[in-house]
Image 1 (cartoon, one colour):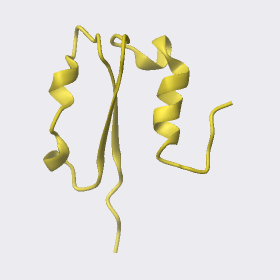
Image 2: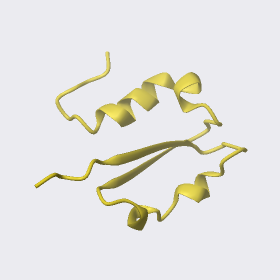
Image 3: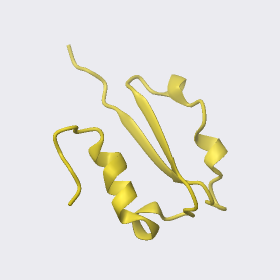
Length: 68
């Protein structure tokens, strides 16, 4: 049996193009686990604005990995 993948959304709290509220309560749209991380004070480009926090959110899906 195949396990559905986890969907991760990393959203900036201050994203003026795609409001953070648009990703709330979307669990039912995905077959696998839905994980949502809202980064405080961040806008539309979390990887550019806060690369470390973005990487940490991604790496939480693989608990044996850490950010240096």
